[in-house]
Structure formats: structure tokens, C-alpha cells
Amino acid sequence: MRRQGGQALAEVALCLPVVLALALGTVAVARVADARGGLDAATAAAAQAAARAPDAATAANSAQSVFSASVAAYGLAAPSLVLDLGGFARGAVITASATARVAIGFAPVPGLPATVTLTAHSSARIEPWRSR
Image 1 (tube, helix red, strand yellow):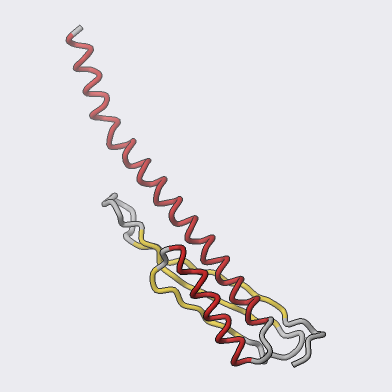
Image 2 (image 1 turned 180 degrees about the horizontal axis):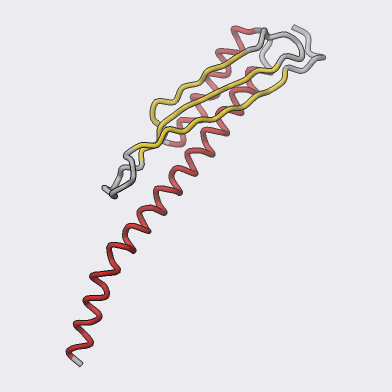
């Protein structure tokens, strides 16, 4: 009986690092997926807000404020938004591109970087019937 108790301890000692690495890796993947979804949603919301604005200056300001408010809930570091208004004419396409970093270095896991840089792109068309 004593020999089997030692065998169980050896099995736990061998499997525990693998199980911990899998658990931490799963948490890191879930965190990156959540941040990617948030960045995609914030970028799309910024493009839509710019497309509904009455002029180019208001479009840039409203897109930036919507983006900042949306991205704040996801714990992203250094979020930035680049907006291409496409001349801001009826029927033009507004393109929004965003980048941000998400920290996954909460536990030192060999092979995992401390941060991951995410990018997102979205576009919205200004309605051709809108008056400016």
C-alpha cells in the first residue's frame, strides 16, 4: 500500500505543471478573445458614429469619443483609432482602423508574451440621402 501512495504523488508531481500551464493558457486565450471582440465592437461603433455625423469635424470627434468610451471597459492598453473620412461626401465610405495591446503577462508562462497587440478594421457608408 505504501508504494501506491508514492506512485500517486509522483503522478501529481509530473502532471501538475502541465495542468497549470493549460489552465493559464486558457485564461490568456479567453482574455485575448474578449479584448479582440471589444476592440472590434469599439471600432465598428466609431465608424458608425462618424457616418452619422453632420460634418467632418464632428465625425472625427464623435468617432473618437465613442471609441474611447467603448474600449474603456475591456482593459486595453494604448488604444488608438485612425479614421479615414473618404472626403466625407454622400455615399463615401468611412474607414476606421484601431490598435491596442492586451496584457496577458499576469503569470510567467514560458513561451507566452507579456502583451499581445490587436488590430481591428471597420467601415461604414455615409447614406446618400442624408443632407449635409
